[in-house]
Image 1: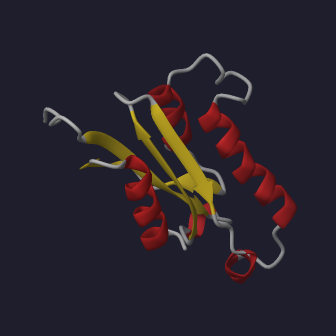
Image 2: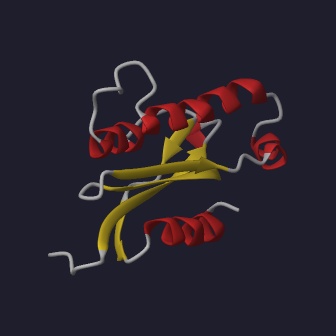
Image 3: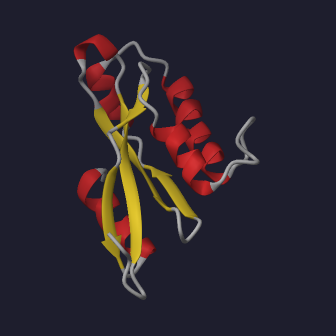
Length: 128
């Protein structure tokens, strides 16, 4: 699908906290979005400890917060092994299928004229 002038093709994925992978129960805790052609990436978190504790009362919330902060460092290219990666490569790193307590939905595509406004809308709809 060719992009129209002034429009941006993007992909986004919802970041999830899934304390017991085998149960597949999760809480949406953030959003990762990137535009390859625009070399743009943005990751934000809104971690609700009360929701997380409802799924797993014994979880170490400090460790969960550290893992979520690592997502931001990877997106910014400020984590080991990611500093030389292009935006789309860092996004793929973040959204790779994994069996861990911090995971993402599969990526979804979209097209928009304003990446930040679209990110804000998706974040409000899917995370907050």
